[in-house]
Amino acid sequence: MKSRNLATISLVVMACGFLITLFLPDTIPFELLRGGFEAGLVGGIADWFAVTALFRHPLGLKIPHTSLLLKNRNKIVQSLISAMENELLNKASIENKLRGIRMVKLAGGLLTKFMSRKKVRSEILEQLGTFVLQLPVEQAVPYLQKTAADYIREAEVGETADKIATRLMNDGKDIAALDYALEGVSGWTGRPETRAMLGKLAGEKLAEVKLGGLKGMAFQAFVGFVDADMLGEMLQGMIQSGIRDFREADNPYREQIIREIRVALFQLVNDETKLASLKEWAVNGVQGDEAAVFLQKQLEVVRSKAAAMLDEDRVSGGRKLFSLYAQLVRRVSRETDLIQSWEERIRASLIALVEANHYRIGVLVKENLDQMDDDSLVAMLEEKVGKDLQWIRVNGAVCGFVVGLVLTLIQLI
Image (cartoon, rainbow, N blue to C red; front, side):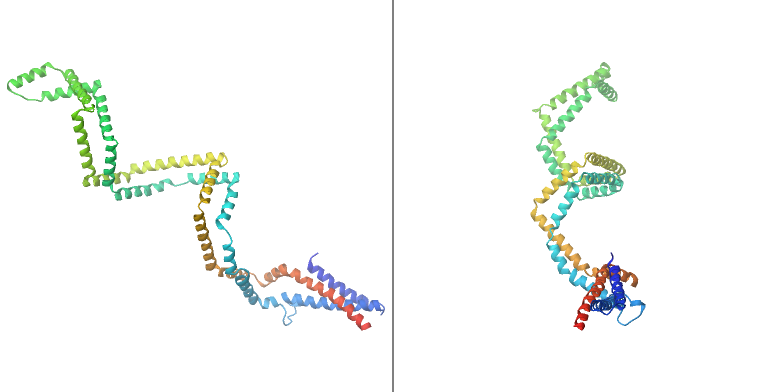
């Protein structure tokens, strides 16, 4: 039963009891009851008036000092705001509460509990996969090109190239490169089509030679004696023999070629003009359309592989994701100084946020109360505290009845 209905019933009971006792004989029991009901009726009416006067004018009559809440609305609002700001939610209490909370541990516990759910991991991976597939990799290409070009421009190519050249020679890469080149030339010259080409080329060049006298006659006799096949075979044999000699470690010509290669290499890495030209060529290449197409294709491949990996882990319930998270948590948990630093920073940020925005609590309360009209405000207060106030009426009627009995008994005595 609602407290308001109970209060009304108590008042009606007192009124009915008083009316009934008026028609009963004037005996001591009935006089006691009449006195009790009369006092209970007076007490119930008085308390009804007092409770009603808090919220509105009793019976619609504008009696002085009634409808106290609406008349003192601004005072009540300011008092409520002051209580919220200075007593219930004051800065000191909020800051003390924040200082007692271990932010990182609390957040880590909540996150671990969250990540331990298979459904949550699957949803995270699904969202990540969708996000990865929607990444506009083409928009990253110009940025990557610019970054690479800036890096090449600012790089100390000379010093780097000198170190690379020194390292290559110390590792014997220049000798390996020479052997590789000789092997390639040997393979090329050993082909039948190369022999034919060399013979044809030698025959054409010999025909262009003009010599007179006995030398000319001897030379012409030699040219008439050999044909293109013989010339090609001769040249092929000489080249193959020379390559075999160059590939021998103790060959003096091999050492001379290696020295020339090294000298040329160091001259190149110390030639500022050539290095600047090389850098400019590299910058132009990086910023070119072909480089842009290449970068975009590579980014698309990376994006596809990343999405496939996420989908594969999603199907397996996010085991790799949870394993990665667990490794990260274990790694971070060992960094006590780092955790303490995070705690201090987070706490300081929250305290600063509270100090800067504490006044907004009162502003928010005032804005919400200002949006309510008088009827809504009264209805809200009656809903929150009116139920308890109705018991004042019940208690007034009951206490008045008891006091009435006592007073009537005293009068009779």
